[in-house]
Amino acid sequence: VQLQASGGGLVQTGGSLRLSCVISGLTLDWYAIAWFRQVPGKEREGVSCVSRSGSSTYYSDSVKGRFTISGDNAKNTVYLQMNSLKPEDTAVYYCAADFAVYESTWSEFTGYDYWGQGTQVTVSS
Image (cartoon, rainbow, N blue to C red; front, side, top):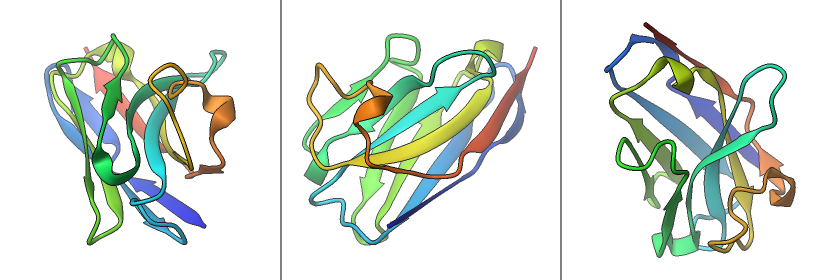
């Protein structure tokens, strides 16, 4: 199983980026995919998650209304569209896969079985 995250970069406050997570070795029909982010010295934070088959999506309060998660089953890829970016969104973003997530547990990073390598997002003020 491999998860390949990409799309990070440097953007100004208010700008947009789209992250991609290309997945191989498992199918989106059976796995939930989440995005987490982490800054040095802090715990990994759940940003968003799409449940298997795309039936449900979840967002942290800090990104709700600004970020949108979506999946393309044909490409086995999950995207995170990030709009109205703020300096506090600066972090390394990771995608992760888990067989089953629930609304009450999706943001717990310890529950995920597979992780991508991370992509840096920097938002300048």
